Image (cartoon, rainbow, N blue to C red; front, side, top):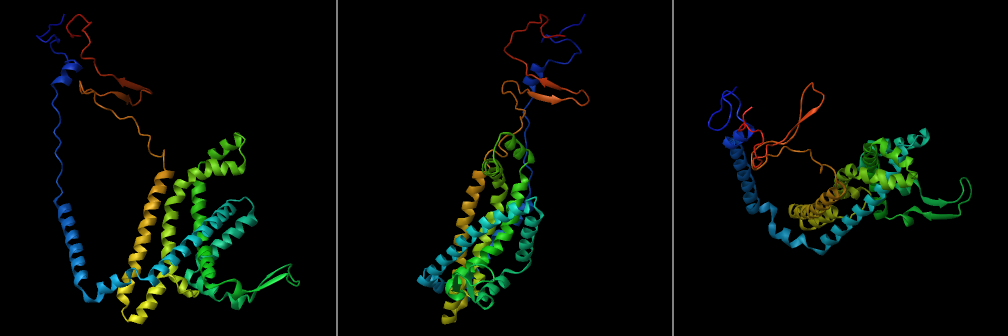
Length: 346
């Protein structure tokens, strides 16, 4: 026979969970201090402020000239041409890259080898060299002939008349970028589990339905981030089309103006500001695209053990090592009447 104390608990026994929870004190968390982080942050701010103040008063930057040419008509038109080069080249590169990626994944060894050879050529040579060759294409092919091989062509065009420098610049940029887009698309397609395709076939979907409704929507989560980087890189690569030669894009146009004014640094700053402006817009668009195609990924979280406000007890499922099953901890009901008849003693 056990004796009980004034609170009804048996002498020498463990107090019930309700009493332990009600008498426990909240934990006071003290945030760790990191003084060196503060010192490093202050140092970075000081360096940045020093650079800004120094640049504001350095005569070589010539900020009045920057303001004069920032919205100059010649610069704004060149910026528009740069955007056109970027958009046209990326559209062609994405379409061709998807085709090459599907060819790389084809079971046909000939198709796969042709795609691999294309990637080997265009990824293995510098883009500036490729653009220079495209600028000399009229020396290699003096005319563009349409007809049967080894016979009199039905239609013949002069290469210089059919392809201007803008078109050659777009072709050169697009063909080079397609090689990189092919690998990006191929990585995205391979990231989708094989079971997704098998399930689609089991449901009676065709290959095109499987790709458009199942595979591509899931692979876009992997494709979008590097594609956004490639678009930004393409925007800056347009400065190399002077090798074609094409001289109406932003960098070459600002360089030509600086040759007239004998003051290159302000014009370089003007071109950089326009590049930063376009890049910032592309980065914002990339962010929203990533957010759009990553919906449902990472949203599902594991059940967390939340303390019950009234008792502070923990609810949830706690695995027991070696038992092969789980134990459920249920918080005691503080407002339930005592049905044991012994005042809570056991």
